Amino acid sequence: METKASEKGHLPNRLGIKGWVWGGNYTLERYLYTLHRLTGLGLLLYITLHLAMNGFRLGGVESWEDLMSVFGMSGFKVGEYLVAAAFIFHALNGGRLMLQHLGYTLGKPKPPVYPYVDSMRRRRPIVWVMLASIMALAIYVLVAFVT
Image: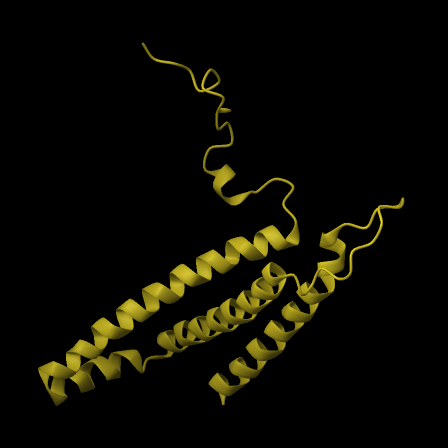
């Protein structure tokens, strides 16, 4: 006997594939968390491919130089920049997350007096500083790649 999703306590997914991308009323921090996970998976894929490509050195000088000539094309420069930008974001956002989890960005406890100040508003300045740092470093790396 089959049970419906609503009987199990689950709501049916009426959004379909759109539900994978659109998070509803997510805050900025939730999108940063999702992007942090995606960049982590992308960097893991890059490291795996990087180690596999270094295996071509075992094939001799010719195979290595052939592979490096392919990676010297202009399209791969865009990929290198994206890896560098993903690394910058993942590193700085990871530092922000560590500070938050350790409690350094929460501030001193305040009595619950109306209007209430939640911890998200106290942590928001570090998010903007982190995003500004990411943008500055990404622009610096872009200028370094172009020149």
